[in-house]
Image 1 (spheres, rainbow, N blue to C red):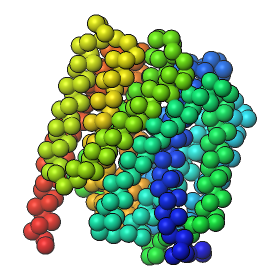
Image 2: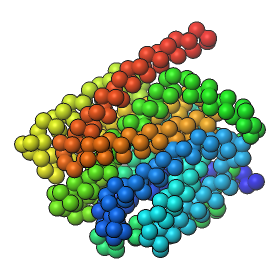
Image 3: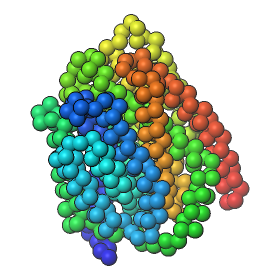
Image 4: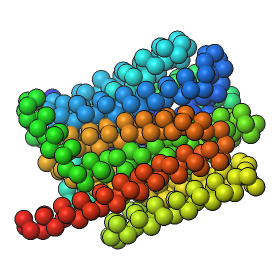
Length: 404
């Protein structure tokens, strides 16, 4: 077992942070190519959207099992194999343009991405503690938001210049480069291995999922992310097919969406000491007002600029909420960091994939009005969930105070 060298820890930490957005790159880089893929593969819009959904669901369901595996067998070697497989499957998608092959490869990619990202999130819990750990965790969603900023922007230009396959060639090359750097500079960060006993692992999962504030927190971040994914799934078709713009424009719009998420995360980090209920409740209120305005103004001023303007505000508030609740869930069970990290990411992806694909197709989102209607429905659900979450959160804090 190759232990992480102390003199490599700084660069290894940078690598760990850089790998956290890889799931976002795998999700977002080919968003501007969705209409072109549908045409080239001779399939419907929903069929090509499903390639994104099966990937997200695969990422999500994998993380139910991956946390305990990483806590028992380590992060490093598993991460290396996962990077190699992700690179290989990216090249297969580009070389074998068949929708069913793409589905299969995306499922494999979901599993490998889960192994990589969960391992890297747990890396920080392995090596850091206290305020330093909290600082790194608050950075996660900010850094993760770089993918929705950079990936579709880059993907739009790749699509325009080389076609949709170039997105997957890029993913294959990028992951292979990370594999080489990991081989040179990284190593095993896990210090205390947990025995792999199915009964105790099942009991740990059960205990976590029966903790109401934790489970409700997972539902909240899943639906918050689902609101973003509804836009990601529908915007290429609205912008390119309905409004008549190019894939590059779709990339720019997604860049602004991702940048908005990052701004929301940065604001949340700056207000980290403010009361949770007050700041999250205010953010939900802002989102609902903006969505209502988006709906009511759609019949008067519905164009690319009004669409993007409302989305920027909605996603800033969404990034703010996501950062806060995500950090709460990750730090809820510090003694089982791998399992908690896996459950947090896993449930988030599963919930977001189900809600986003379901609501995007339920409302057949092809306009600002329909996008607003889908978002409002999701926001009403998640606001109610937050009220219940907060009551359980307060109860758990009271119980913790009594125990201390």
